[in-house]
Image (tube, rainbow, N blue to C red):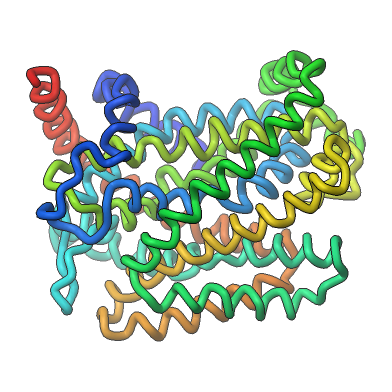
Length: 430
């Protein structure tokens, strides 16, 4: 519950503190993302689009497919409403934290220009706050392990083809290793091509389900709003789900999905080429909208329209797969297997950069290759751990990353407000 209050409360504060102005500039944010203001002369390593793609590759993943299924089975249809609430206020949080990642950029021992929560803390708040930066990076070493992704891929391939989870884990390790050792430039190049394709495939499949079951669309969305405040029957109907449980589960799963407030996205957006920090904050703001409002909502409809969320024997990505199959048959399930693989690999690739940045801050840039091996080991272990163990482990680490990130963002909020006011005034004068 404290994490729910912290994420929702701080996000609402950020939105109101700038009078919702960033939310009214979604069109401008899209133009920035598509390259209207790109310049190779600006400081940084990757474009606005590549930065958003890297962040989205980490957030649009198995959490959007398996995570939403877990939210619905544990929190009922009402959990989806609270995911939306968390996403809207999360847009404000992302705007603030990623703008700060551009305002306070540091250099590692190799001279590379970098941004992220640890640099925001150290450069923005001063050396006396460095323990917060160390806390963020320490838990980031574990929170950025993509164990849930390898776990859900292993679960799906085991259910679909009877493939041993150890073999799935080894395969995931091999694929990720091809990209993870290449640095942010290679990661940005790969995700910049990968993310649009997987998003189009998934949205197309989900819209087909929406078309097939359009007759119950109103009923499904009615359940989401109604059960957000009244609760619902749990999986199998054995016990009731109350308002508080629906809210907590919805916010937790939204936080896991779009990562607003956790401090991971600033690591990607801090590497973007720009001399206007507010621009990158606006680009980052699109992340929770795409991830949760669009992708997670479609997953929720696919599941809730099938009625399988109350069966009780299935959950996670297997529930989503069964829901798709009930509407589109075996071809739909096969397509979902492919999409899950794409989502999982893209997330694993992006998270490798996040973890390496945390490791490099703690132990030096020349040692970040050591973390890559630790990271690959985490992928392998996640494939055969139980889903419940993985979710609890990662949720705890991510929650502990959020604390120093939100403290720093709240303390430095006036800096963002001043930069945003100046930028929007100049934009209006153009």
